[in-house]
Length: 498
Image (cartoon, rainbow, N blue to C red):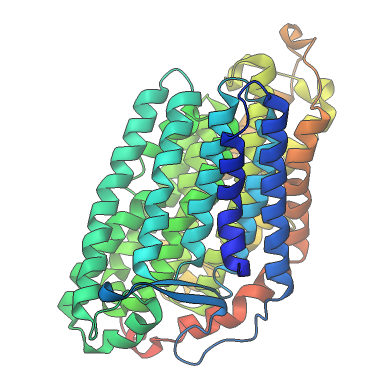
């Protein structure tokens, strides 16, 4: 089996093995799940080791580790997998977060066998989305993520888990229907009919602007739900609050990135005229996501809901970078995707650590925990400072590049969006002040410090938060050559509209 197929389907193999294990052997099931996610992450490191970031195409992406087989020849459907500088960092993020969240999932005690099966099946779908270069295959993996997430929230979630799961399912299915229509439109518009993304990139010159706009809207409705972009964001806070901690990590760290990835890989690369037409609306939506998301986070007293709304805010920075249609903007959006997954994944893990002990996430219920839990408080402070964009930490670089790229073309909206940074700093500092500073609340005098399992899960994310903040070239070195090529694919088309 080729490397990309190995990385994609190794979690499926692990899930099938787990199904064969008696449900009473909980320790073995947990061990198999952690081993499977660890092996998948190790395989993705092999992918990184053999990847040449400077091997790029001239007019369309030049893929590496290509796997292409006839699947349904009569329909022009191929099993077509490949990666470039856009997808490799996101695949690494996916496998890393899946591994660390699996370690944290040792705390799951009910229906452990079913939990880890759905968890591993979810990983298959996520990795497949970032590897697939055939639209039929892409859509198959995209939809595959829907069912496991529905069950992971609906069975192992909080008090409103059924409502949260149904709302997530319906929102995502609504968008997916329009995406399917867009895929069919591209298929029938191409000659010969094809789902091959690279061939569709080359064929778009024969399509009218009005056709590209209509198909772009169809794809955007599917992708915007996942980002989530205003006004399709309302499913996210509830899903995060009700989901178990490791599922929240995957939801924020990976699933939201699928929407931004699709905007670059499909909407921009295949439908440039539609993307160009949408730019004035995209910059406004980015501004709303940034400021409105930050204001909603500011209004929360539930720490998990606050972090959930901060994700709406931070994904707005990605949209800001995408609206620039430049190397700086696209690099910023991709960097923001990676660092948001790391930082927000750590935040959800840390909120889960506190909730597992105190059984409350109410910011006003604590006080003075900094002296009682110094290790936990230190990691939480580091992660909060990174999320609010403190220079020297990973969150700053992506935000700065998104603003830098967008300001050259959208000065008014970019200037207004700076308010989001101030509001983000305000709600994170307020949370830290109420939870960790001030008089100690004696109610929590027996609260234990973060344990070894939790440190193993969150520690690597804290290290990467510092590492990518002081050495961003670790990510930019992978993405920049590909992004330069992608941003210049239709440079002539975007010079006047911005």
